[in-house]
Length: 513
Image (cartoon, rainbow, N blue to C red):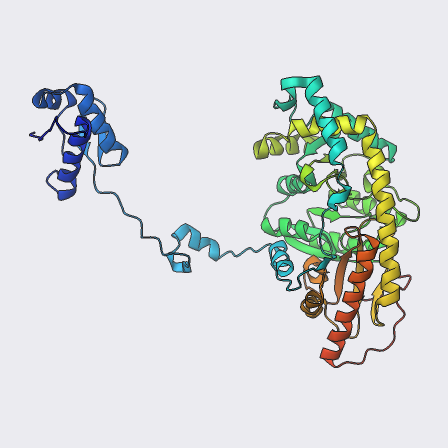
């Protein structure tokens, strides 16, 4: 093969060889699967070193123009299939590859995405939000937690950023969790505690280990919207049990257990999200007994049960568990800092080992640096001091919200004062819709979570969830005033006369479900 080489120009010799062969390939002079001269013979013919030819062949191979076979030589590669040209920002459904188009036949849109878009559409320049879920940043214990991190690095050195020696979590942290739960009346051994990346991962592990597509899950109606998204993503069927002022109406559970044969019961019995209610002690015992009788596990989400402002604490379902019936899930993120992403679950028996293996193949382990820092933070007493501080702040905001609602909201609204947590569940009457109220309220400069996002089946629109924990009392006052104006504007818009209803009733109306 004759290749013209010019040793007087700055282009390297291997590049001149590569360019010549590329032109031959592209012109069709060298057809697919044509064997090229060996690097040794071509180097000899051109009077260059073998390395020069080898570099030229390697450059061609890196661009997919040739391929090599050990012991056979280098060959011209067949033409590559050329992907379609990019179509700019807009791509129609037919332009996606077939495997992507197949996904369109099984649409899945988490409700939280719809809610996020709704909250992002607020036109007011300075809105007051009663919709956010996170702890207000002024309550984050950044300095104290930073000191805990420094103490961990001083004490543990490189081990602080290692992968740890247990997939279940840092043992001193599991011991601390067990001590906290035992002090709250939940008998717990460290070996039954699994540290997770937030409570959401704990819910996910349980759901993926226990459930299969088309299984039935018994949930409260309404309930935590992201848990509903999780269950829907697994293609399970959701069966809702109504909630009243005493929590889940457990008396309706047995029929569901007998007829629908659910695979799991998911419940938030303490300071329920979104209603704020607490399940009564009688119903708690009844639910555990029914789950045992019908051989159905209970997944108890106690995401914020330690934020109590009034009344007597009821035992956790896990505290009533004779063993292996209840899987208990908790979190530190809700009280400390949302980005901490540290939660835990408590379970006994074979399910613990199954979830431990499931977690390992999911993310190997939760950050051991953060686990060690949290263990240090708890051990020196900062966690309980912070919890007392948060409870004091939230109590003042809780009282401010109840007073503002009673003072400003017009007749035709009902709510039940919760005994703790972060939420007030407001019901509109007279045919008013929270979904219709939202855009009017957004223009007035206040947002909330429409209650329709929290129902597993039919989505009633007469409820809304207000988070009183995220704003100081003066902002709560202004926010409720704005909400009141929006309600009056909606009523004018609807042209309806709503009769007087007593506000702030000491119970939930019969249609509260």
